[in-house]
Structure formats: C-alpha cells, structure tokens
Length: 119
Image (tube, rainbow, N blue to C red; front, side, top):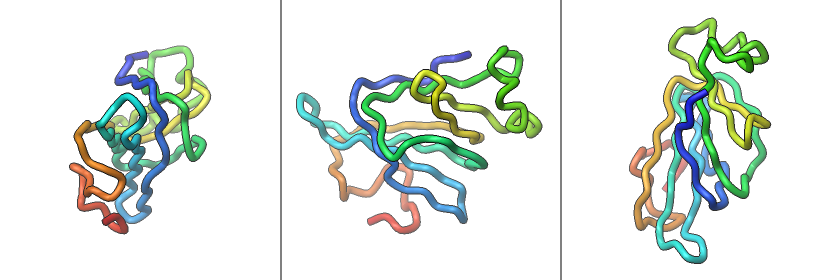
C-alpha cells in the first residue's frame, strides 16, 4: 500500500459527474487555514464513501497487497487503481487521483475545471 496524501481537515463530496466519471472532494477554508483543497478522482468506476470525512488520508492499494483480494474487480483493468480512504473503510476505483491547494473559496472555480455543473 502506498500513501498518496493526507490532510487533517474535513472534506466533502463536492461534485460527481457521471458523463466524465469524475469525483471532486473539497475542503474549504477551515479555522486555522485560509486554503481550499480540491481532490479529483478520474474515471471512477466504483466508490463507497460517506458524504463527508472529518480527515482525509488516501492510500493506493497495490494489486499484490493482501487487501487487494477484497477489490479484485478493480485490478482486472490494469489502468484502474483502488484508493482507500478512512483507513480502508471506504474506497474509490479510479485511474487517477490528483489534488490542488489554493486560496479559493467554495464558489471559486476548481483548478481541475471547468467541471460540468459547477460554477
């Protein structure tokens, strides 16, 4: 398992588009921080996660990892990765995961945009 990123702040599902299979998680400016963080998952084929997370740690599961047996379907497509969140309690099957931190607010366009349906 490879640690991708970790933040000790709340994230919410901000946007999901079926047509492009993109999932955007966002943490807006919180007390003690003026920044906003956007995390984008691309080509999402399956996900299991709550609408918000108190903190976010993203791990990428390697096909050879013993935990991968529970996610065998994702590894049938060699480009697909399993991203574990919440210590493995939640997961996202996607081809890419990227993030960007900036001084934007909740209505400022994402660096990953334009995303359909977002201002």
